Structures are given as C-alpha cells and as structure tokens.
Length: 318
Length: 307
Image 1: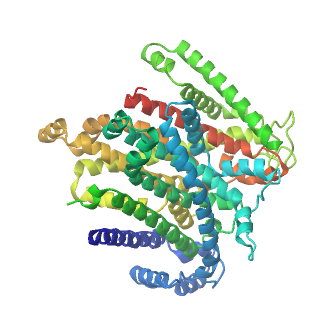
Image 2: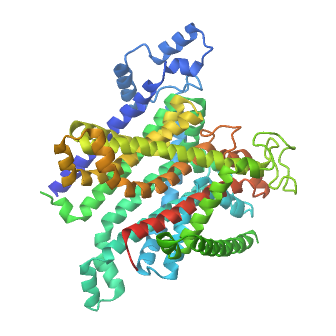
C-alpha cells in the first residue's frame, strides 16, 4: 500500500505546484496592463489625486512580489480582498453564496450525464457500424458543434414554453432539495446534453480501441458469451480511459456552466464572473478564475490517480 | 403538442438536408475531374452536406452587401416587428432588419473567427516548430509555459484577460488567438519532433543551413498535413468561444452585426414563443456542424481506415 500513498502524495504535490504557478499567472496577468490598474479602473479623465488614492488603497505603491504574497496569504485564509465595483464589499462574501449553487448545478448535471454517456458509449461501441451507431454518432457530432446557448434556448423554447419547467432558474433561499432540482432542471439538462455527446464519443473510441486487442478476440474465439467478454475482460482495462474521459468532461462543465448560468439567470459563480468582467472588477474575476482553475486541476489530478491505480503497469513502474 | 411539432420539423429538416447534400454531391461530381471527382463521389452524404453549407456561407459572406435588402446598422422600422414581406425575419430591439443583420453577421462573425484561428496557427506553429528545432532550454521553457497556460480552462482564462485589457474586437482576437495557440503549439511541436530526427534534417544541418531555412524548407512541408486537418477543428473551437463571449456581451461589440450578440439582444422574444433569436444561434451551430462533418471525412480519408 505504501507505494500507492506515495504515488498519490506525489500527484498531490504536483497539483499544488501547478496551482501555485496558476495563481502567479492569474495574479500576474494584471501586471500586463499598460499604465496600471488604478488608471484603468478610473479611466482617462481621473484626477491624479484620485488615482493616487486608489493606488494606496489597493497597495499598488508596493512592489509586485509583496502584493502577490499578500494576496496569496489572504486567499489561503479565505480572504480574496475587496471588490472594486461595490466599494469595500469583501469578495469572499460575494462568492460564498454562489459557490454552492454552481457546485449544485455541476453535480446535478454530472449525475445525469455520466451514467447516460457511459451506457450510450458502451452500447454504440458494441453495435458499431449499425444504424443506431450512425445515428447516435451524427447526433453527438452535431450536439458538440452546438453553442451551449443554442441548446439552452431550444430547451426553453420546447420545454419552458409548454410550461413543464421554469425558464428562469431563480433559487429562493429556503427551497428544499426537490424544489431546487425542479428549478435547476433546464440548466442541468442543457449541460448534460452538451457534455454527454463529448463523453459518449470518447467512451466509444476508448472501448473500440480495447475490443480490437488480441486478448478480446481470444476470449470470443473460446466461445465466451458477449456480455461476459465485456464485463470480465474489457471493462477492467477500460477503467483508465473512461476515468480520463469523465474527468475531461467534468472539467468541460466548468466552462459550460458560465454560459448556461447566464442564459437561465442562475445565481452562480459564472454569472458573477461575467458581470464582473464587464464591470472590470478585477479582484472578483481573479478569485473566481482561481476557484475554477483549482477545480479543473483537481479533476485532472483525480483522473490521473484513478488511471494509475487501475493499471498495475503504471503503478509498479520502475 | 409543441414537442410533437418540434420532432415533425426536425424530421422535415433532416430529410431536406439529405436531399440537398445528395444534389450537391451530384453537381460537384459532375463539374470536377480526376482525383477530386473520385474523392467526391465516395464522400459520405454528411461530408457533402458540410461542403454545401460552407460553400453557401462563403458566397453569402462575400456578397453580403448585394444580398442584404437593408443596411447593417440602420434603423429601418419599429422595434421587434414580426415577420413580413418587407422585413423577412422582422426587426430587432432597435428596429434594424434582422435578415440583413444575419447576412452581415456571416461576414463579421465568420471573418473574425477565421482571422483569429489564422493568428493562433501563426503563433502556435512558429513557436512549436522553433521549440522542436532548437530544443534545449527554449523547448523546455516554452513547453512548461504552455503546460501552465493549459492548466487554466480556456474560457475562464479568456474572461480574465478580457477584464484586464477591456473588450474590443482587437483584444478579443488577440486574447483568443494566444490562448488557442497553446493547443497548436502542442500539436506542431509533437509532429515536428518526429521530423527533426530524420536523416535529411541532419544532412541539412551539416550543410550549414540556417534555422529559417531548416524550418521553412525542410520541416514545414512535412508537418503541413496534420496542421491543416487541425485547422478545421480549431476553427470550430475558436468560432464557438468567440460566439460564447459575444453572447455574454464581452466579445464583438454593437453595432457590428454578430450572431452571438444578436441572440443576446433578442433573447426575450423566445419567452413569447418567437423563434427569431434562435436563427443566429442556429447559423453558428450549422457552420460548426458542417466543418466538423468535413473534417471527420478528411481525417477518415487520411487515416486510411476501411470498414
């Protein structure tokens, strides 16, 4: 077991390192501004005094590395600084209430998409080159090519118009789980449709790759039942590619969530981010970018660990 | 009943597309000759459909001012007029002709996406080929930089950069091109790695050829094929991310006619059961589907797979 823990610790350390560098990029990007932050926020017409004031308030008179470490230590303690657009309001306040909503939506969508995509992926791989496979493949290829907002508006047009589901996903504070699931159904379904297509195609490719290998042919030639070949011989080896597929697509949810939240006026991080971008509220954007990037890095890390665990050759590599 | 109608329409649209694709393939096979004709004759209907759509978009983009009945930015009626003989698709929130804006949108949206993809390829392949050819610290440095940039989801990264540089078409093109060039860098570096170790490169090096000659004359011709296939896929990604940003109000800015922002401006109509705002979104979807179909066919051809 020791080497397993060592491997996980190694991956975690690597992930932390990545996050550290990502935080430098997210923070350092503001340094690319011609002139500086204070000038950009106030615009050309600002008086020199006003600019100097803001600069002092934001600590811009300090050297870059000092400001970076101040920010980083703040972040580690859950303090993302204060918003520029809404003077003095802590960013953490603005984020906290929405963080839960966004994760709820992402998990909701994942819970629908993952089983659906994996089942469909295995089925089309088994019946490949059949009519079902062709239809599923063309549909998936089309769905991948659709912008998220197109899928969302089609769903609104078809489902919300007929009054089955609400098209505005406002989340009342005291709503119970059933109510929340009902209200968030259309945004979650949009994400599911977009992600399922990707995931199904990748699962299909992973399984077809496996089914072409000689040991599967051998099992078939022995006269083994098709279902047993799949469950006992193909699936254990498919865990690694499938874990990767799932992780990549859940990471994809992170970007999908932004657009979908805006379409359905869902009170999540994505919507806050878009609003903050147009208001040029840099601390808020930095905080949300860091959260999304952390989730992304973490998902990729998990996929990496799972695929290593499922493959003894990778686990016991010299 | 709405749901049923939706499926009926879907079936009609699919039937018409198949017929059009079949017709286009027949015409294309008739006017071409030799190798090209053989390839076209064996093209699946999906690929024929894709080529037809791309062809139509190109014609519309080039001839936009001649086809559009009204100017791009002029208010020509009252707000949200319904479909009529004069304004085919009605008017938008400011009273501009929707049909004309759709047509100009072809030029703007597709043009900007194409320029961005081209820029991304220029940046990505130049650095990718340099990294592979020079190797050493340059390769290490660039590769690690790209690794880190790819650790941030691209839409999130784009939003961060747009906050900092503000939203204008030029910054939009630059930001998306730089972010997307990381993917091109990966591919071109990987492909060039395989070429750099060939004997003829060694020979050219021993001849004393310079770096520019090595890259443009010896390596580039041998890595073009995979890069061209990637261009189609990248174009789809770039097109979708620019549309998404425009839809969020952070991409192409008004009054330029653009499909993403047209959806945003007229989205309220959907709740009244009017499908007009879906049309620009559909136009985006149709083009990406078409490009994907063609790329799929080309990849299949290049891979030499047979059923």
